Length: 246
Ligand code: C5P
Image (cartoon, rainbow, N blue to C red; front, side, top):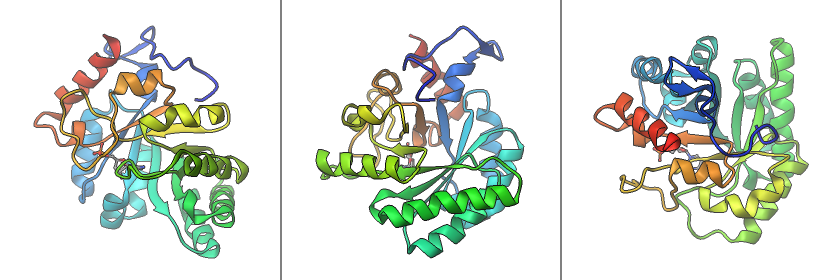
């Protein structure tokens, strides 16, 4: 991702005659629901727009590893957003399980430190090797988008940590894309807190529009309530994609 595009969404290839393959590959749907049936229904309706499904804590607690395997087998890249933060041994063992499920990404807090991040990377690789699957990458959570107190120095230290410990990418808020730009060739930058202008920001303190986040260098946008909490999620997804094409 970080090395194969210019940051501008393309529209040359199309899927369903509507959504460019490039745009779809840059959009992750956050299935923050507590019911796998509802999650499957949303994913099926929204699959023309989203190449990645994010299984977050709520769905994972409700439905467990089955949810990750289901969406991977359905052809999505699965982003297992467990935001691990524990002793290295525990993280490694949990990551080993995630590595065997067919996920593409798994999150861990960079504040957990170098040993914990390396344990996450190694655990994923071991689990994937055992299941004869490609190893998922670790996405290091830098600063939550609900947090507007962290400094640029903290952010750059966490990017260094992610790169040095073998993480495949980071999660950062859109306003942090400028500070994290020096790592763009080494770390995929995944950005939550995406809202269309005038939309409800919910509990996100630092938000950006989808177009601005891509132009600023985001590789993958995490789209949650902007679509999932809309009265008509498909119409909201169409509005999102239209905003990227205008
Ligand atoms: O609904 P909304 O678009 O605010 O969803 C944001 C999603 O991104 C949630 O699933 C949340 O857990 C996740 N996230 C975040 N900020 C981070 C990392 C992940 O909001 N730094």
